[in-house]
Image (cartoon, rainbow, N blue to C red):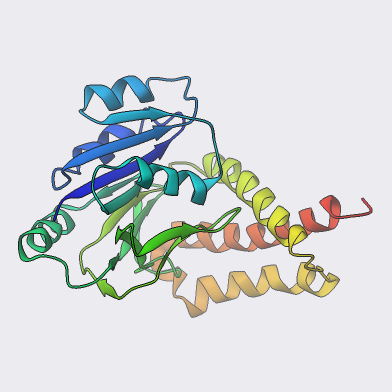
Length: 248
């Protein structure tokens, strides 16, 4: 079982070394960069990755393009702000030795937010398909929240993929602005209408669901920040549909 690890990048010099250094179980590492102006490309090559420079296609299309550049059919796809835990790396080594019994594998993702590992708030286990046979699976999603859709059987790994999210609230707000715009564009293209009721009631419901029903209060003040940001995300997404949609 030969594995190609793929990472798409744009100005990821801070995160990329950690991601690449965790991929000792991969037989090659392919970095697809879309015009970085920092040291991303230089660092990727220095750490042994093969770099392909190309235009930006959108998240899902870019990740499918990265899989197409790989030498092997089994793809281990990471974002630049992710890395394999030591336990997950060991689990993948065992899978390589035994051979795959499924066409794709999910893995739980554990996020680090504002310096704390988040184990509640609806953020964990947050299972994602990241290891897959490209002949049986592909990335889908035109705008945001892309995911792997597998045509074959799906197995499950048990160890955590580590996700290093925002180090500050200002970084979170900046990221949220970009993603809510993409989410609004997706809703507009689908001709989804946004009522006043959704604008008024969905944000507070999101806060209540995240903080209380999903036990965000167990994540401390970081959990409180997550619940508030989740509510703001929904408000901004729907408000942008109202302001960006036809007739505005």
